[in-house]
Amino acid sequence: MLGLMMHAPLRVAALLEHAAKWHADTEIVSRLPEGGLFRYTYADAHRRSKQLAKALLRLGVAPGDRVGTLAWNTHRHFELYFGVAGIGAVCHTVNPRLFPEQLVYILNHAEDRVLFFDLTFLPLVERLAPICPKVEKWVLLAGPQHLPANSELPGLCSYEDLLEPERDDYEWPTFDENTACSLCYTSGTTDQPKGVLYSHRSTVLHALAISLPDALGCSALDVVLPVVPMFHVNAWGFPYMAPLNGAKLVLPGPGLDGASLFELFESERVTFSAGVPTIWLGLLQFMRQSGHRFSTLKRTVVGGSACPPALMAAFENELGVTIRHAWGMTETSPLGTASVLKANQLALPPDAQRAELQKQGRVLFGVDMKIVDDAGQALPHDGVAFGDLLVRGPWVVGDYYGDRNPGHLTADGWFRTGDVATIDAAGFMHITDRSKDVIKSGGEWISSIELENLAVAHPAVAEAAVIGVASARWAERPLLIVVRRPGHEVSTEELLDFFEGKVARFSVPDAVEFVDQLPHTATGKLLKTQLRQDFAGYELP
Ligand code: ADP
Image (cartoon, rainbow, N blue to C red; front, side, top):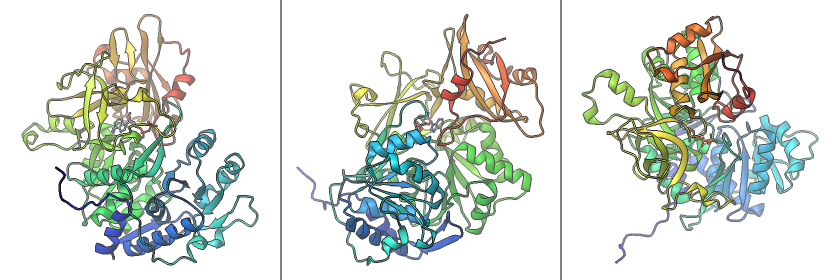
């Protein structure tokens, strides 16, 4: 027997429609790539998204067509999220920091018909256009005064000119909630980029789930500023979560350095933010140098790579800001787990509480997870046994876009994350490594993340990476690669001594190399494939 409740398919446009109706005056503030700060409301954003929807229809964009963006976190990018998905088309956010050959691969693979770009990326798109023939129209996300005088970009026009002739009387259509709404490619840290095609249903369910207090937690009292880019897994869902909850939304544009972020946090009274560890390391350095302190910022979500415990402690103790550690991936929309204590853990000693909070955390309702051994057998939740992390749920990828490769799912339908993890008795998952980064030394597995976290706790270390290098005796041994903090000196011996007593003897790196900088991926993670190439054939002492 079916239930007798209304049939109301979940739709992305409904999130903005809700905010426009019930939080009409709540502000969206956006720093613009062409300069200046722009300020309007959810009601305004909704009206302009409708104008955009009509403009897209005028251009002939049909349901299912891909519409690309190469853009920072701005109000126009926010309008694209809703205007494109609202008509049943697919908003494909492209990461401009990828290597040009990856960008060409992605744009051609997705077959984007229209591409919206920020002024910052004009030189980039002029190089891309001749080799991306599927793009029929290029739209500059600015007013017409910013259009270049001579440009060969097909159909080039400005976003403001595109919207201008349209009225805002559009009614969002209703369609099957499993319709695709957005497309995001993995950043190819370990492989070729692969397209993850989200649906209206998965996006709305994810937005609801991340709003819960033990997930990211969001309310109409919050002022949220996602530092995580809108081209990185939909800014972890913030552009959907904010209108769902009626939270004020502050979008930092291209200003991601410590000084620009701090200014915006203060002037807009931001309470809650999110980003990868690199961003917070940069901000921490700025705060220490300038001596500034936050007056409203209370907490920030850190994910994308392991949050170093030293960073968490510095934010808490020096800046009074709580870091919430979270885990996810492009393939999981992205949020899978967040680290928040349970009531019965409040009796634990402070050190034990901290150790728990440094893990990647507990699974949200909707996602299920398990760890398995090489034979696929489930491993115990004892915080010691580690194995391949598998997940499943309504916002976890089933197939990749245009590349039905069942190898990513187990026979019984779990997604292989490529991460290696433990799960403890309280349900806290702890990533020990990516399966490709684990260092296999003799019969032991050494966690590169654990060693990196320890290294950055040393006062002279700004950033650290650990990779396995070939060893005749042990197969692989850990090599520590370090960027020193400006003005600090430290020797190999001092650094290696620093590990003594903190990890098992066999885990202490064999050697240290000092470098000026480490290579990063387009999403700010250590690019270990590059490091492994750079240090191929490295001779251990
Ligand atoms: P890519 O796979 O291209 O790097 P993603 O952004 O999808 O792009 O990365 C997902 C991966 O990032 C996860 O599989 C995991 O290895 C890593 N990751 C994400 N969050 C964390 C975290 N909190 N701690 C450790 N690793 C993390």
